[in-house]
Image (cartoon, rainbow, N blue to C red):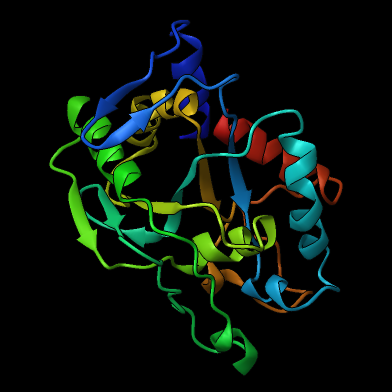
Length: 237
């Protein structure tokens, strides 16, 4: 999705003039927002500063988007929300914090990330996707942010002052489908929206085993680290 969004925007050099689309005021951004995929890791990064990812997410945002304006809103495509057809959460007021993982420290379930909802962005996302043939797009009223959204956002925007919306994934569809879906979202980059994909590069918890367990046949076995990087790069590009 990330690559498709970037390429889709690059193919359209015109900046949109200020207009109104179903209640969403669209302004041409000084520069198009970049898009990112976040491998968020353990949700415990929110409370455990010893985990390297904690410091990364706290310091990464200014470095990654230095010199650009703050986003008007954030659209998170979370790997932890799966539907048969696309869905967006439509929240007026404050997003609920969805604690959708069992077995975490009690402190985790007390965390709240009260980011404002972004109903106009939800409907703009629906408009773009249905216009590109991805309809019908359902509206989930009142659904909050799952941990794929609030875990990284809590560290990136700790004041919870950036409106946030989520878009679901369709696990029954292939990569080409989601690539095209990402291309349909490309106009959001010029409308002040930061689009984030969130999940993990590999996430089969059933495959976790002892540290001395045999390496799965599909996994690279070269120099630690370099094999994973080359496999991930070859798989996603």
